[in-house]
Amino acid sequence: MFWFDYGPNGGCRAPQSWKLFCRRGESWKPVENTSGFGTQLDRYNRSTFRRVETTRLRIEVQLQPNYSGSILEWKILEEE
Image (cartoon, rainbow, N blue to C red):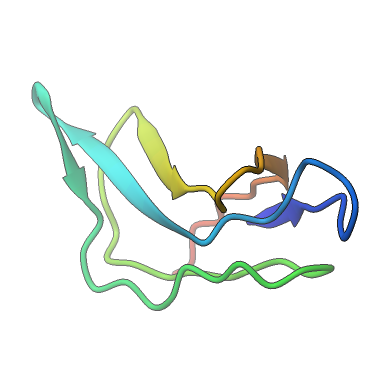
């Protein structure tokens, strides 16, 4: 995840936190065995998790108070 941040005076900031969910059946479930959901700036924030078979992923973001947020780029890589 690469966050867009237009700080310190802009209205778009990296979030406080975020989580990743996958669709299983008719419900959304958190991915399992995660390793971090970083919000550092000027870099990709890598997160690993147990392999899932799904057609949909969803990110839930907790924004910073009084700011909007934006994803600059999101990459999903499958590792062997």
